[in-house]
Figure 1 (cartoon, rainbow, N blue to C red):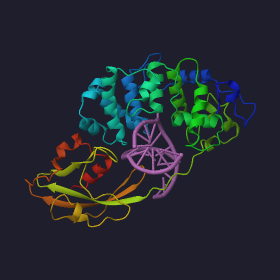
Figure 2 (figure 1 turned 30 degrees about the vertical axis):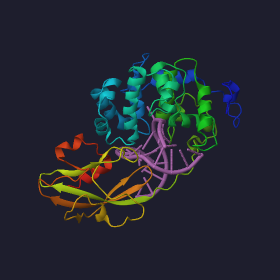
Figure 3 (figure 1 turned 90 degrees about the vertical axis):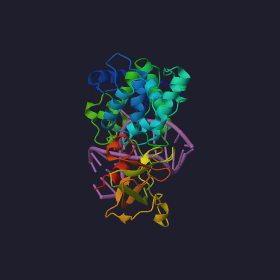
Figure 4 (figure 1 turned 180 degrees about the horizontal axis):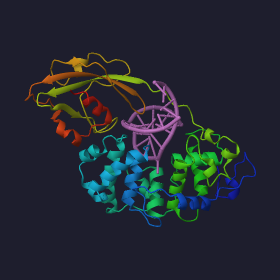
Length: 362
DNA sequence: GAAACGTGGTT
DNA sequence: TAACCAAGTTT
């Protein structure tokens, strides 16, 4: 990797004769093809740091299309960081339900409170201070610093990594290549317009330098691109093989009262689906656990439903068999549980897998 | 450094 | 359909 941002170090040693990528060239392209996104300020203006923060957390490992309605909803409900800090965590989790990676919601809330308490309700402008806040890692710290505060920073996300790996035909596979790619990214930075450059890299990766079938003919950096010169842009970035995804099994106890209410509990505050609401169930194990009745929340005439609910998480697939019981109105909730009427489902922090379970009622 | 951590869309 | 992919962070 380059020890300094010297032009010579930017050249790909494998393909001599290619020019160095010119950041100004990318910025020109960005000015012509800039996409409008709800969290993006008008050209030449700085965005509210809170909005940058909110969008960047939501966009982690999540598509623009998926994030859009959640971003609009959060911003309407909690317009300022102090509003979010004042909200109960349960409300934030409920609003986040369906977006996934729920630690983001818990950290988003903790971060809002930290900004209010440590920084008087104002996001700090420097990368190091941002990095010290909960849920803000190297990428997000650099994104907020560059986009909201015009600091010199390189928010190296998956788009940056792909663009850089192709520009320099990096043969080292991810994730080992990350440090080297980041160094290359820092060396690419222009001398101004750091926020625009950061977003230009992301737009380039999202619209032209795509994982499959990249539109090299339209790329402002086709001339300096080593992968393009080699005729195989799609081969980059190389990636290490991923671990297989096992299947876990469990039984969910769907207790429905005569008045339509369903028996629900909250999950432990951290870990998988931490703090979210759920229908009680056995543990989710690879090997079938012992006697399911041991985990039943109450004594009832359980009957197994036909097909299991299936759901795929990031690191395992789940096959959840549903045991249902219909109970008289007035049945009390066991300790640690509560009855929730269908009208209250939307206010409940049900993750997607639990919405699938609840859809089996009727 | 590797594993945990969601979800929905595309190929 | 199984695999891959999307603006990563934490432990």
